[in-house]
Amino acid sequence: MSGTDHLVTYLALTPAFGGTRFGPFEGLEVRLGADADRCHIVLPASLGVLPEHVKLIRQGPMNLILAPAERTATVFLYKQSARSPVQLNTPTAVRPGDSFALVTPDGPRFIVEVGELPEEIKKQREGRGGGRRFGGRRFPDGDAFKQEGKRQIWTTLLTTGPGQLFQRAYTYIVSGAILQPRNIIMFAMLLIGGGGIGLQSCRLNKTRRALSTTTTRAASCQEQLDRAEDLGGNVEGYEFDEFITRLLSSSALGIAVRDDPKLGALVREKAKLIDTDSFAWVATTKGTQAKNLGAWRKALENQKRLDSDTRTLLQWAAVSGGMGQARFRVITDSTGAEACGRGVLGLTYRQSHRLGIRAQPEAYFLGDTTALPDNGAMGSHVQSNTTIPTSFTWEEGGEFDIYDVNSRERCVYRADGEDHRDSMSRLASDLSNAVGERGTLLPDTNASWSAVARVAKLYVADVPKVDLLDRRDPGVDFSENHVSTALKDVGAGSDWVLERTADAIAHALVLPCIAVLQGKDEAAVKNMLGENLPSPIECLIFDYRLRNED
Image (cartoon, rainbow, N blue to C red):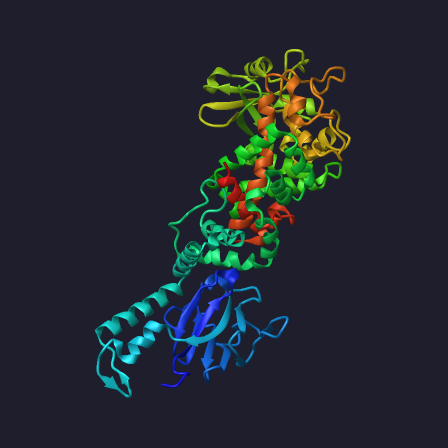
């Protein structure tokens, strides 16, 4: 038997795609594509791979031809000596060590290898398995058939999406490579493909479709792996504030959370508790909530007196407000009582009045509407139960109406005046006056806690003890101290303010990651959230740390 008789073809994915090695292939052709019946290596059609995409043809021991299966099959060849790939339009000679990518230059990339048959197969063919000779070789006996059958079954399994996942995971575990940061990222990406970030992130019972989606994401994130090395090199030592800086593209917000430990602990805890399923609309970018979030972001962007960090946090503060299309919703206010929140932010009348937002009074009502038979009864209910303290001068007269939040809870409100909470553009304009660069009781916009303080002011306006319109004694001042410190003198309601502020920051961290990792329409995600989206790799590392910290 000559020295080349045992040489066969192998194809190995590059390390960035898991390093899986396929083969040995002894035939003259190795076909790659999405059709499992025609191809030796099967790739998900969701990658853009054709049923039969490319062929590798052996012409000699070390001479091979790489040929796109048809004109529309995009294949990029990486020659060992070349600095960049070339797109193939015709069959091209390749040598062992060359590699090729499918669909895009950053798509699944295979290295061409030529090597000997595995020892067990060579031993079978040299006669250790017994059997009669035929054409100079021993005819395989039953054991040889079994072994070859097993080999072919495993080759088939390992060329499918689930098989590749299993082999990659097994190799990472037994070799210890799973502990390397780069592989932690890649393995997290595989696991996260079906469920996204958060407590519900691992969906191990997903189908091949989910695994195909994962592969697509892995390919699209390839160009970001170099950035991940900088992060991944010290995954265990990376601090929470550094993730905030990375994900929100703001060193100021990272410093603000770091220097305010009480707020930082709340943000971390709330980020852990976010339920992915409740925010699936962020990834689908469909429905009223997604539409409203996109419209609210654009309304804020038009306000030049709001800095970018404040706009970001106000954008995500709306998620806590409800983001629905309903005019009113029932909330728990700073006193712990049920109250009516209006508009995209779910602001109470007390909040709106003290922030200088034009608003009409309303009051929460529980029960049958027969108890409010006419305009006078509704007006009396609002006057007696409005969230504004009794020192507020009630405006006489007016027309009132009832909004049914559900079958038992209602909001009674004055209906004959303008309320800027109903208009995103007017609400954003009023907020730019209240918490923008000229807002009172706030730090300079260059202060690290500037944006956090501006969001806290939005909520502290609901605390009865605080009257932002009282210039002599407003009850709070964020200009010199971080939020937790400034709230110490507020008393009752301070924890509510801090929790709502932490909610806004946690949503700003986690929800864009859900959209980036799970969203199928990148253009729709950007239309809703803007161009400044977090890196998928940084999102994965953040999720890993969040779920595995002490």
